[in-house]
Image 1: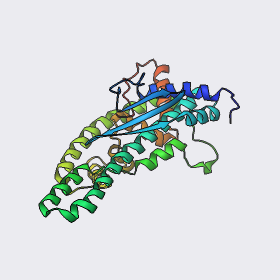
Image 2: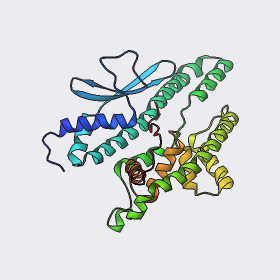
Image 3: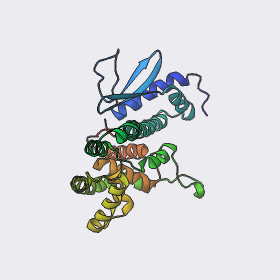
Image 4: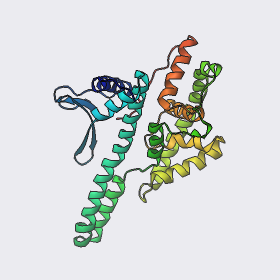
Length: 285
């Protein structure tokens, strides 16, 4: 652990850099309306990230990040390593809260239905409530476990050391990324079209995100013949872009964190004298 006596101040500065990378805007002086569904603000020297959820009203979740930022500053002497850790922490919080808030809202409505509506209304009114609850059912996913592993930089440590890329592999990493990205763009279009058809066919009866994922992997495996683990990335809860899928796939294949892989790709492209691709936000509002 770093013995940096200025860890809190450094942590806040690194956290601001992580916000910029994730394109999470700052809310200045109680700006109304807020600049985004996800934003950060400074309150009495405390930096907080705020997630908002809108549906039949609004719910806000404000999380203080000073402690996390300080721990990152103490744990990583290299600024970029600390920023990468905070970026993954922000992604994990967003993925968790995006399910937590709508799930809590949905379960509360279920409670109203079970304790009040079910006992005191007609069958027709109950059908209307059931239809509403089906529409509001959040799409669940097991992607949180994957994001927990990414945040913790989990890998198989039995080999003794972290997987490392050879110099030649690092230099050509942008070429690998471009190839995977072009393939992902085609699959992404088919994924979105297939999901719309699946949603239309199953919306009334209801379905879980896992059911959609199982259907998609089976359908896409027969269509493309690619590794099911690769195809499953498209069906994640956060609906990743083709670019994000390419980075996550490279992360798995290289053993490095997703944010570090992106950094390596950018460095590889720069060393080769190639122009940077336009980067899209990885945290969706």
